[in-house]
Length: 283
Image (cartoon, rainbow, N blue to C red; front, side, top):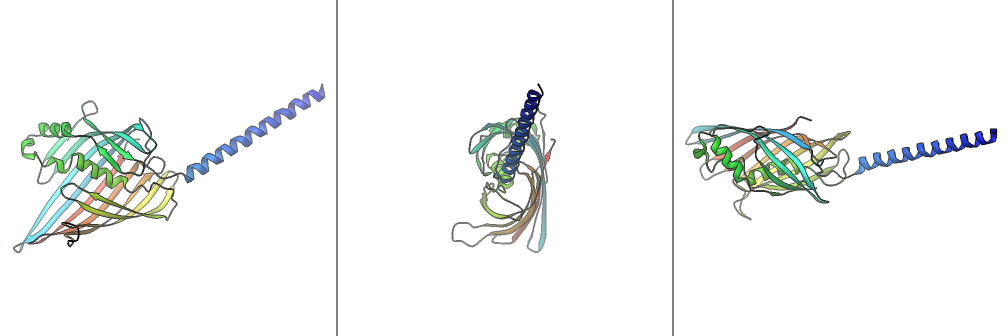
């Protein structure tokens, strides 16, 4: 009887030991996989992420000895929801909740969650915006909502359109390296923004730190454009900033840059400064 009890106890201890060892191995594998996996655009399926964007810009120039200044402020609130996922890209629902434009043009557009209009975007796991669906319904809704809608016809696409939203998301997600990185690693991303006219950004990115799943990225950029290949630059500038990105999802907690661009015309130079501030809101 005693031998039988001893045998059962010994067997229970062995089984417990195997279970503990298996759990440790599993946790270790998950931990190392978590640390070593690629930094890609990978938002959780059916999770809604809310963002608030503020853009403050100033244009200044001197013409016939007279200085001129033009101030512009744009606020956008929007959300992204991953509604379909493949091995290499994600299809997201883009919902525009607020568009306020203060400056030369005036817009004050708000929609609650029940009435906000949406479109669809596709983003690759490297953060490249591959496609933005037609946004005519959203543009028409903005124009219909504003007393100056007719006056703003043809101007709103500078801020809200397929091209403008592509450029907006390209700026944000282009910092994603689509590879495994560790603190102090660097990488370069080259992008072209096409709203109004093509302008090139060559971005030098540094992973300055990683705290759990939060990756802190420092951004320094050269900005330039030519009228056509081989011509002299008519736009030159620079940009600096920092992004805090969730390493597991590629979704930013914040993305903030300051840029200064000089555009050369036949009569004068135009200096354009911009503060671009994106914050994730809610959970």
